[in-house]
Image 1: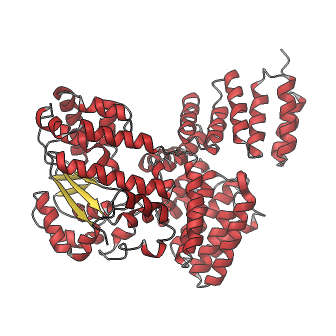
Image 2 (image 1 turned 120 degrees about the vertical axis):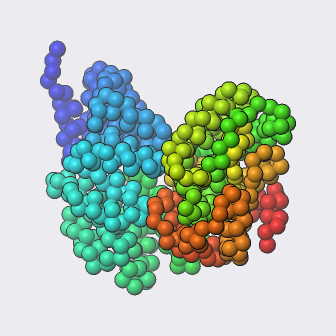
Image 3 (image 1 turned 135 degrees about the vertical axis):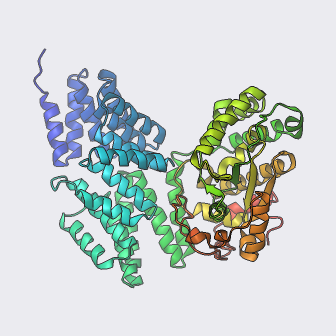
Length: 573
């Protein structure tokens, strides 16, 4: 067998190294036609297609390479990158895991998997994976940089800066060095250290002209620096230049970078009082997110309808249920941005309460009993579970919950979307109590649409779908309040503003807890908040979150129309 490298392949590899993607594409195509049995030919072809921003063609080329050599970890990594560029995030994660199965510890696979997990909402798991990797392999620049990026998403700036300073990437790795300075400058800006941030940006510029995909990130830091230095006119000019760079970058952009840039610009123009311009960027960001998160109203309606039909009063009164009564579980539910984090933080300040954050365990219990957690047919299987199966599910759930804080009387799970699975709570956890958080649906809709949520929120990417979904949530909660045997307390966000002490008394009474003065100063408590509400719950209760929708009424027309059609605004002024 002739092991001499194909001259076409050598040309393709050299062209890729020189940054000549078109020449690499032509040479790699010739290599594939010359001998399609060589996996390296298809691999180079895939790299070239990625370089010219054609991820669909790249995916096909890497798949061809993997068909010839299934054990090739690098090909799995690049196949996953192509999937990600196409919006297939779960496929991208699966490809990285496949690469790690073939080559345990593969640096790029771990770094990419951590980033993709973060984007899909697995923030705790992503941080654990990347921290473990950095501890084991401090030289893994990709893992270190992605971990720092994750920390900056949560504004844990000092941690990110310390992580970056502990181990700089090698000077010859230009891409990693650019990434390092971008992250370091953002950390310094978040910390308000303007002169140092300017030096970091100067160091970035000294590396040479940044590639197009980096320019919007760089421009955003210049916007923040101008704001920090008290020059709003310069900030506006940099924001306009950032938009131009986004347009120039086009399809070459890393999807997450595009999305971040849109939400950053939207926030900036909103703060500048230019609501229509801000909404244009929010719409563009959601348009990008919708590629990987399609939404079908019919499917969601079928799930809601099945829950209402299958979990009726007769099912709870006459059907089998788990018998173990444990008063520890407390579920705080509602739409995202309805006040669930605030409610949890006030409760978690109590000496007898542990705030467990947004736990996936109820959804997993639903899936274990029924299948997919968002499928109508799963509802029937869960509702049909017998007492033995429900008892086992309860024991497993309670064991996991109690392990978090064995000494606390109440443990709070504040996953907002648990409202979808409260029928299972009624069957599985007879001692659980539920707090339903409400807020003006227009404020909820505005807040959801204007935040970059990680995880799976397909309903959020169109204002009409968002208004319709909020109305469906209200309909389902009305059903639970009428049928569920577990006690449900409804708390409006405005209740905390209008009568904090009285609302706290109601809530503690609902949980059978004595008064605790710490609840009134919940914002002083230490502890990490992972949700987008982290800034709001680090200050006393205030009315700033009430009526925020009013200046944006015209932009919210599709959302408000859906809420009106469902009569979901009755009782809200």
